[in-house]
Image (tube, rainbow, N blue to C red; front, side):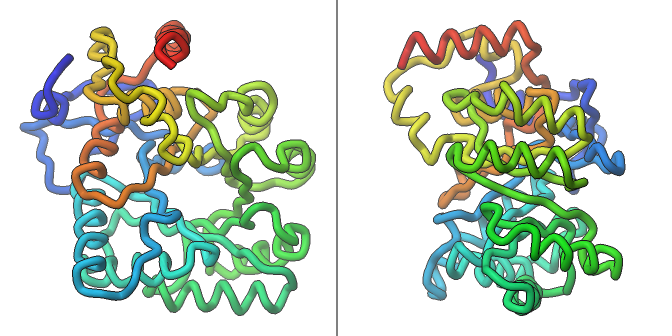
Length: 306
């Protein structure tokens, strides 16, 4: 097992591509794992950031300061995609407040969702999200949990044509609506699909991930820690020594590297309430990723200790 300082200095380029994070020079040569969005070839760092539960906080000085620090650590380590939703209460407003403090980092890839029934209600909701995030427009607008998806898809196409959004996506979570999503993705040209995928929930490997690969759809893996349940499952269990072979130094990185190492997964979006955990998460986006043989070994080990 290698220490974090050594990990941050790794310069291993992988087949998925690499980027250098802002503020890290060539002398340190820290390679960030990035994957291409199939539809455009645009590279996106494989570790993103979710905001479900973790950014749903009151607007008090201390809570906002912690979330801003989380954002600061994220961008300092090459982060780009931040995913949120109107469903998450104050999360979008908290993200927008932090981004304003940080001056809207250039690497920012803004992703949120529309989560309401009705065309005009959807338009109003997306406009409100624009005001909360600030700086107008989104890189990715997703239809949350497929709610009224056919109505919103028409609007999103119009917004994309007008340059208000760059990509269109659709989401589900916790294994819900997989059959419906498979049908929709097979018929409609979505740029992104988001669903739950982690080492304990590998159901998407059977149909959703192969379909996304065939259709050229970027995949965002949500709940990569299964809502924290994966940590409960391995509490007190040792990280295997061979985890160092793919530059992994803790369980968070073990779980994240498994998710992003699937060829069809573009990025994973873990969420956290603590800056130190953000630092750990971002470490998963550096160095090597497991090959298919190692992925099988990871699953076997996880199953043996849980």
